[in-house]
Image (cartoon, rainbow, N blue to C red; front, side):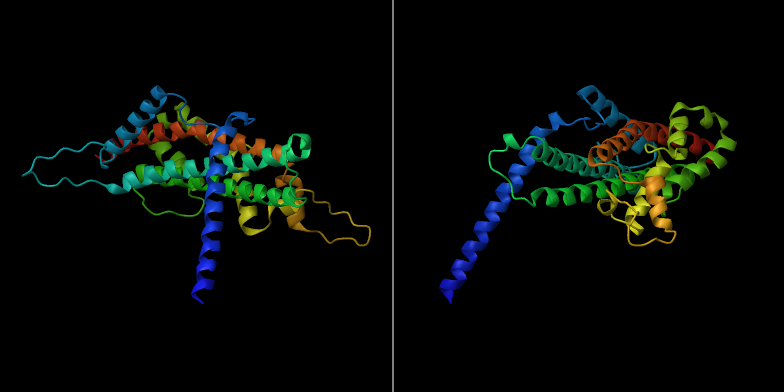
Length: 303
């Protein structure tokens, strides 16, 4: 019995070691593969100066809202200062949700490159892969695409959560928070401080919020809701409703998918995803700028 247990453990740890090495190699090769991405994955900062500037803006925003500063000095006998840690949490969530969306797109792109290489350049593959590998990878690809859309929508809700707190001191998160928060700011704060409506940052954010194009917010939310509540993108990739044996009744779901939100071919879907993320990246600093502006102006109104 002890011998059987020993062999069982040996096989278990041998498999674990193999999986650990496979995961390590996957991460390592994936990092190296990024230079071959087309299009390239958008980045918040591309050099040290841009990173320092982003850190500075974030730190100033946290300080203006009474959050915990990056550097804190207190004499031994001084009472402990009180800070609003919600500010730090909300901003950390904004960065974290952005990074999670980026990671999902990164993984989807890697899966696409592997599939594309197997299908187009089999002569360069040293060891012939199993016949069902492409199908398996395609399922993983569409899974990551769906996750990426969900995480992108979540990122915008985090942005709405931060703006809701800054402009209205609301700490409660609600579904589809971004759109409703932007609308409330536009209607209420825009009347009190009409200069808001002229700010380039606000104009760009509002334009994205109202857009129904594939690179707009309304399209993103509809695609997200479709994924969560109705369909899997993979199932509709090559959807056709014509059948020689029967006529189908009017199907609202099929019409919605085919006319408005139909999944594209993998390469085109990936470009669409990159376009959404590029705008999220471009508008990230705009959200911080509006947040900083709001922190100063709303304080002035309240005082």
